[in-house]
Image (cartoon, rainbow, N blue to C red; front, side, top):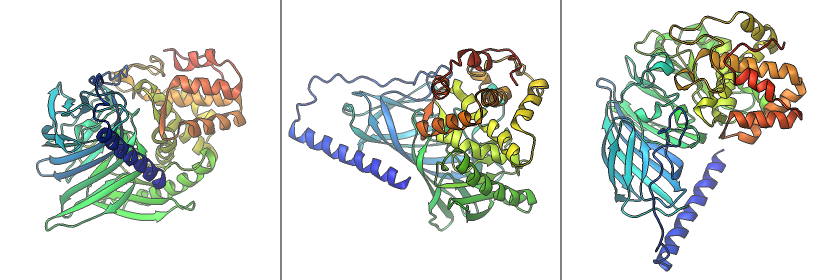
Length: 482
């Protein structure tokens, strides 16, 4: 993975030098170029102004200093990107923080805030299509935690805890703490450097590459060597009991458990389950897509943190309390089907959430529990009650549930049920072929419901339009196909 990252960096550097050289040799080459603003959003039906047009991010370096007593951040984020059009200006997503300065390629750039999230940046000169550029944003403030119907009014984004903070950004919380192209379609590499008072620790994605100590502070530098969607970036600040190990297949593993519950026997079991799931699923679905695995377990009783079960943050899922084996299987499965391959639109969330739930049931089937067929048939016959204020279990269309219902429990459960019904219909060998093809073709990228449907028809040689219409696109209980 690191070699892949280095090669991309080298190609970008060569392109940048070539662009400068070309400009010196032919200063009139840009004459007549029509520079235009990048779009203020990527046009996602659920979040039209989330993400931005006109550029593609290569990597982020997020540098923050956090004061837990006040919740204040002082931060600098550096973004390396490539213009995908001739840009006069472009946007980054940053929610309500105080922007102090912006530079583009080392020169001060003008900037303006439009609405709560848009940071409009106008460089001194236009940016040519296919040129690389660097943006440095200095900002500070107290990140504002998000709430709303999407997450059943639970806090998400940058969430303060009694002794620190944790970050759970699905779907639109990344911009609460760093400026970004905040949509899964623009995956990038990340390095996050966090400085905290001594006595606290910071756990992030990927590898801990530096840990310098100041007079009264400690700094933790985490880097992830595979492309990552912004909503999967995490940084948990607090007091943890950490262990490092290696799986049988040679994957580096780091588990961090809130020190208040480190003696809980379930914490030790989490490490063992994570190790086993990472290795075994590599044999089922293809090589584990990242260099590291592990877990972050927060204290469920620490207000105001109240995660809805867990979040499959890349390489290191975040749990709200010691999980059971089913939770671990689901979130490790998410590393393939949600982090490795992410939803191309937020309406496609069933692909990641449904696959994760299907993996959970499939794991139980392989380890002496009831079969996935039996588990989903039980849910089909007797669906669980939905939380107050949510539509009924059969009252949404899984592939387009609406923005506020995109994380409705039925999206994951019925998504997994649809996958099991497909497995039952096409047979085990075709299901395995489809699953592996889905992952290999889309790894480190994003994909849509239409992509999955087309691949399923290609693999099986069958017209599956009626099947998908009933199971994914209709807000009603499908006819029994078990």
